[in-house]
Length: 303
Image 1 (cartoon, rainbow, N blue to C red):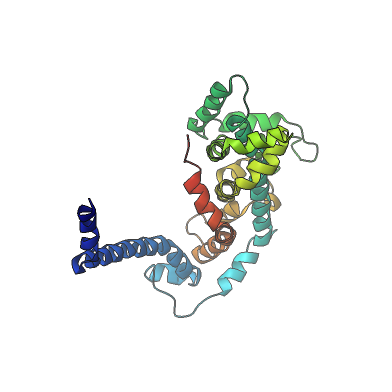
Image 2: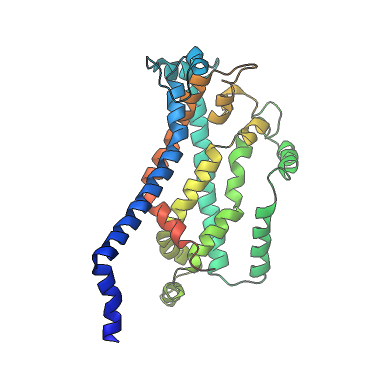
């Protein structure tokens, strides 16, 4: 057995084994670098367009940088829309995305804790029903949701309902979500149940177990859900277009659509606005990158 076990090690230590290992590593790095370059291509194109003039956009190749860097496109973009600056739209998007993220983290973590730890009747069928809502397309519930929000009174709006306000964009998040509940439940199931049992022996109630044991251990999964939720809310275009009416309430995605004219768009300012709108997403991912990778790896360990 000892002689047979030393044969593979000897092959790995041989010059041919080391050469194959280095070749395989070089191929892996080449594939990763190539994939990174492909991912960066759209951002390089956006940066090149944002620094050109409108005539240069159509007279030069997409990746040709202009002779002069027109950084004034960013200042023009910021103040080009009448009635509001781009900072107003930026603030609206950040506020709505933050509220949606906070609501999903609170409600989905509570629901996931209930389905993963607590025992109650019809838990299995109820969770299956929640998961079934994931297969329903957004377009199917679009009209029913609009009718619902139109019937809800809100005296501070011109229509007297939620239509024309930002409430339909974030209030729903405080009633839970199927994806967030499923993601956090998978992570909670990977936490040893002995921790909760020991806490019950010490006299802790379910709320204390949830707040002091499961939430601190679920930081990677919570960071993953926060990034996904913030990204989906920040990039949402259809929902603000349906419910918002006034310019002061628009988000960045709606504001970027104003740069598209009837026949030709103002591409330099549109690309400048798109790059600026990417900054919160980049900052959020950089801050939560460690927890995000751990959450993706651990949330599916146990079904």
